[in-house]
Each structure stands twice: as C-alpha cells, then as structure tokens.
Length: 237
Image (cartoon, rainbow, N blue to C red; front, side, top):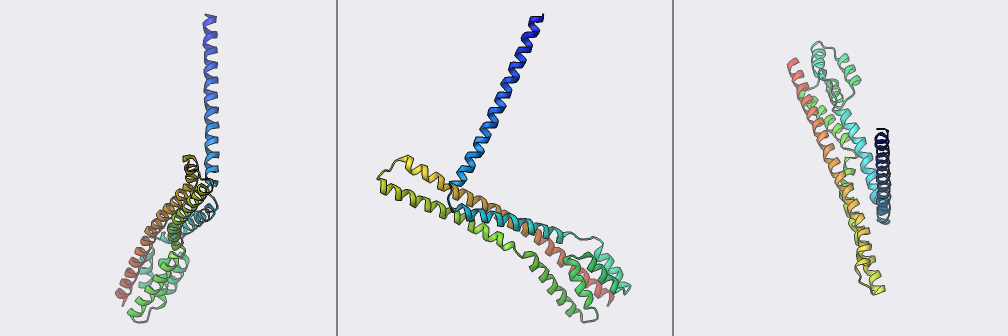
C-alpha cells in the first residue's frame, strides 16, 4: 500500500514538473515572438518614424476631442425647464447665472439669447444661431487632423515599400543575382511599412468618424435647445 502511495506521489510530482516546463517554454516562446515583432518593426526603416509620429498624433487628438465632446454632450434634462420658469417669472439675471454655472455649449447659446431679450425675435434667433455655429466650430477643432492622418499614414507606408523595392532591385543589379532569398528577404521587411501605415490610417479613420457621430449628437442638442428657447420667448411675448 505504501509503495502505491509513493508511486502516485512521484507521478504527481513528475506531472507538476512537466507542466512547469511547458509553462516556462511557452513564456520563452512568447518573449521570443515579442522580440521578433519589435525587431521586425525596426526593420521597416526610416519611414517608420513619420508613421509613428502619425500614430501619436492620432491617439492624442482622438482622446482630447473625445473628452471635449463627451463633456459638451452632457446636459441637465431640467435645464430648459428651469430656464422656462425663470423667464416666465422675469428672473433673467437668475437665468443668466444658471447658464454661466452650467457652462455647456447649450447654456452659452441660451445665455446669448437671454442677453438679447428686448430686441426683435429675428435678432435673438440670429444671435443664438451664431453662437451655436461658433460652439460647433470649437468642437470640430483638431478633428481634421485625424482625417489627415487617416490619409497620410497609408501613403507613407506605400512610399516605404516602394523605396524598399527600389533598393532591392538596385542590389540585384549590382550583385547580378535574382535569387528568391534576396528578393523576398528585403521585400517582406519593407512591407512592414505598408502594414503599419494601413493600421494607423484605419484606426485614425474609425476614430474620426466616431467623433463625428458624437459631434452630430451635440449639434442636435444645440438645435433642439435653440428651438425650445425661441418657443419660450414667443410664449412670453
């Protein structure tokens, strides 16, 4: 009985050792893959520098505009209701103070309309439309950079590949050797630039259009608030 227990114990220990060795081998293989990928990226050449800069620009401006648009899109559901009550009670100063405290594109637009109360309705409408357009232009700022990156990054990748192909054929002309190893060895390295440029371009493209969706939601809120504010003024007229 004791011998059987010892055999089971030894078998279990051997299994644990096997599993540990397998895990260690997997970790080593993963490290080698990571290193080889990094070395592969470095083999892309000098053209990888502007592609890397484009990726940094895309990430920075996406995050910056995303935060700005999310902040602009947040609004108090009771904001226009409170404005309606204050205007009805002729508490215009309190309404203006509330707009300044809220500090959103919608509140700034309404505040401009409150400052124009007493003038013709058409003048008030034009003033809030002007503020609305100005707020939209501020939100659109820097978004075009993502569009530029989406167009430039793939072209940089193709330029890197073309430069690599030119170098390959130049070496072939000097060595007078058209072996598959010479051609494929240099070509796959230069295709890295194309892949990198396309990846950066696609991500920038997706990010740009996602921000555009957020911007459209803010524009809708501005238009809706403008119409509601004009209805409030016409009701009180």
